[in-house]
Amino acid sequence: MRLRRTPLDFLLLLFFLALFVSLGVSYSGWLALDKFWMLTGAVAVYYVITAVPRRYALWVAAACGPLAAGLAIFFLTADLWHGGLAFAGKFFTPLNRLLALRMFWPLLTPHPNVIAGHIALLLPYSAAVWLYARRDKKKQLALVTAVCLVISLVGLLATRSVGAWLALITGLSVWALWPLSGRLAASRLAAARPLSRRAIYGGLVVVLVLIGFVAVWLAVTQDLPGGQTIAERLALAGRTWQLTQDYAWLGSGLATFPALYAEYVRVIPNFYLNYSDFYLDMLLELGPVGAICLLAIWAGSLWLVVGAVRRSLSRPYPHHNTKHGDVYWLRWATVSSFVVILVHGLVDNSLFGGLGTPLLFFTPAMAVLVSRYRGKEKPLFFSKRMAWVTAVLLLLLAGILVGFRQRITATWYAYQGARAMDLALFADWPSNQWRIGDDTTVLAPARLYFDRALQLDDHNRTAHQRLGMIALWEMDMDTAVFHLQQAYTQDPTHRGIIKSLGYTYVWQGQPEKAYPLLAQIPEAAQEMEIYVSFWYQLDQPGLAEKAAAAATFLKNNP
Image (cartoon, rainbow, N blue to C red):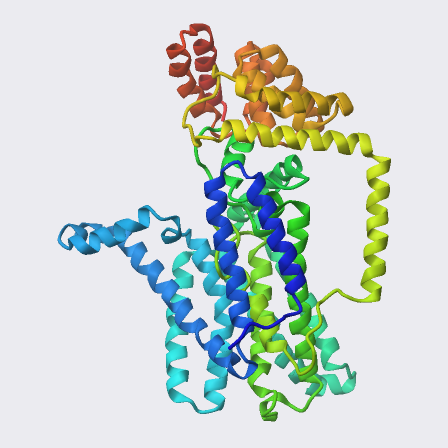
């Protein structure tokens, strides 16, 4: 086995360069380096899989069954351990020490949704292997794969990840609709009004998508089971999108989401959430260029496997085509796995969130492997047409930069200020202490950048929000109100701005302005009770009384 050139090499190189940039701009070099090596491992997995000859593709897919089952067993045993069997560790010291390691290594304590996402993207390959094993009467392979499928499905159900369930159902449906479209095309109903099989399949896929949208809409608007969770994920996506606007140039850097979301959206000094969804997380951490590279890798590999499926369909029926029959179902499994990833990525981030995962490029690697054909592998997107398209886009970009240079320069200064602020705040994060009254001299470089941004564009929301927060920490309430009001005018839905402005109104003694804002913050009443003792510790009885009054009002008027 030797490494091969693949059509995605250039895109992977660009992605790797984007990782280096994100490593450099991250506020935490150690956390960013951990994620960098994890994603480097994902690239290595890609090249190991694509180095396998295509005739062994079935055995690569066969490994997905034990891998998915292993993830399910790991989750189930860990869940049982924490759910009521931990007392047994007192009698089995070595086992207790082994399981205790899970508390010290993040890779051993993944969120159930992460486990569910991995199992869901692997299951289509296990289904394909089981079909091949039955067709070729390989009883042992069929039995092992069936057992792994059952264990994997039990583990997937145990995670209670509705997003992963729906993603898997959607992915398998995209596969299953093709044979269904063949039956419909051959039915008596179609004989009266003939339609091609591909037209029927396209219509069924459109219906599937519409059903998905309607189901989500009904779940959210009619308060159906799971609707509240979907609404929360949609709200989280909106808030993360607002956060990405602060880092619109080079991104915030690898492994930065938890601190940024806690500090600037939740406005709390402690850990709250590890990731948002796949698309917004990569946009936040990698910036636009890195996100485009990663999406281009997905789009390119999906293009490859869809083209391979179309080539298979242009030949005789694949069941009886010995030359191409061993990859036909694997090609459909890869399409199904892509759908799982793309759908699940809308509500969760099992592949890029936290420290990432080595399986980030597994499905693209399988797409390259099962779509490989004899002849020279050419890079994707390299053609005269793409060269002209790229040139036109670059000219448009240059025109935008020239036409809006003042506002764009302001966003650059705001981005620099946001980075400088992160470096100063998150050197020892989480602090688990409110920042009000802290020494803010370390934020002088950030303040300078924000001032420059406002000189060029006095409507820059990022600069106003950050300057308002700094003034609040310095207990300069008038300045804080001025900047936060300006930020609120620019974005009245930003949770971090609403909360900061509401709290500032309380400390300034304007409860009539504060309460309508704080009514939108569920944790405000509880935090105001904490602030009572906080202000007494700082010898600020007047502010403590304001906090107590606010807590009482918010508790009585939920």
